[in-house]
Amino acid sequence: MENRGLILLIEDDDLFRESLTRILEREGFSVEYARKGREAIEIAKDKDISLIISDIRLADNMDGIEAVKKIKEFNPSKKIPVIVMTAYSDDDAPVRALKAGVDDYIYKPIALDYFMLRIKKIMDVANLQRQEKEYIKEIRRMKDELAQYNIILENKVRDKASELTLLFEIGKELTSSLRLDEVLHTIVERTSEVLKVERCSLLLLDEDENELFIAAAKGLSHDVIAGTHINMGEKISGWILENKSPVLVDDIEKDERFKSRSKEMYYTHSFISVPLIFKGKGIGVINVNNKRSREVFSKDDLHLVEGIADQASIAVENARLYSNLKGVYLQVVAALTSIVDIKDHYTRGHCERVTNYAVEIARKMNLPSKRIEVIRLASQLHDLGKIGVRESILTKPGKLTEEEWEEVKLHPARGVEILKPLTFLNDVMELVEHHHEHYDGKGYPEGQKGDNIELGARILAVADSFDAMTTKRSYANALSLDEAIEELKKCSGTQFDPQVVEAFIKLLKENPRIFSK
Image 1 (cartoon, rainbow, N blue to C red):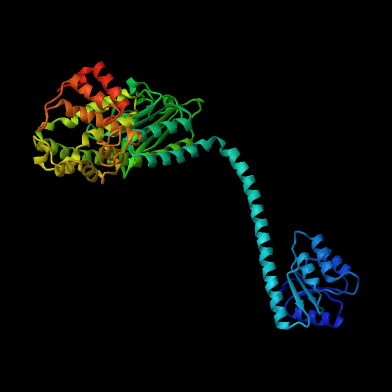
Image 2 (tube, rainbow, N blue to C red):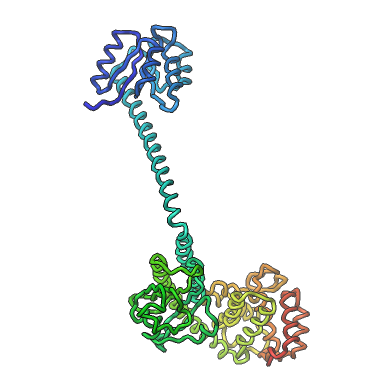
């Protein structure tokens, strides 16, 4: 039978001790016994005890609880489980036992089945705790070994840490952007940064012309970028793409494959060139050239660029697809917008003029290019919702009825409903929805006020109203430029944002050519 552990039995009743010892041994335990507390302490110092079973009253002046307490003090980390037995009722004993760390307190006479069940339960718990301790010890050992391994590994790959960061950052940035220019810029900048190269270029294939052009680069002049056009199979990049094969060259002047092809300005000394392949089709080439340290490129460098090229291929094609879809959607929406012009000939050309005014105001206010692009699109689409307004209302020469006016006021919300499936226009939708809000909060549809109205919508409101003032409508004649400026001043702070009005008036005075009837 498998040994289930060593039990220290502290009992001065020889008959009971011998009887209990036989039972425990029959259950697979080894037993060491002591009649006195001090004797038990000495045994516990030398033996690997799994469980202590002790009577409280012993043959010397140290009782079982005190003996257990001393043993635990000698072995604070071992946490030996303890069962205390007694045939006497002592009000103080249970409390002292608990403080000494006793696990179970049993009164004699003992029911054997119950007693063995308690031993099994306590031993199971102790074994689990022991296993947990061993696991923790093993984990700590493994952790120490891993720490040592990491130190060794760190020494080996310290110079490659930035490469791992690059792959992570490129993957993160490429998945966060669908703008082709941003994707290409990320690839070139991060590759140059980690490989510490003077030159990096990414060429894409123009399928119509069947030639490569530089789509993004670092370390090359504008003349080289603009003047580089390489036919498939020609020079180095054309050869790489045609053969769909990456290359690592230590010195181009000594490489028989490429020294006669080295007509591209970005190839000198050691270089890496890797094709961009998407679904088996070559779409471009990425080149890195001239380490700042003047060292030659390694195979690790080549593997890194190949990894970048794999990610770049997918990102470039995704960005192209997104751009194409976006263009198609915008063409469809623009076609819908033109229907509004057809319905109301008085407003023909209105969206183009409003777009011109709004973009110029945004530039005058030094807004970033991305916000200007949002304003441009919103200006083109701001009246899209009028496609749902009856033509008789749009062209009515007299004053609108209250019912008719309520229908007109629905056009911003209707425009948003039309655009809603085009999630890439979310920022544009906000401007379309709120371009009839007033600075004093008396506009529609929500009655937003002041800076709570998005700045682009405030700009669009001024541009839209100015064009309405200065063009002939079914219900009013056109104002002159001076009259329109006075009207803008009059409504500044109520209908319009004063800062936007100020910027537009300055713009009109500095460059009156932007205004034409």
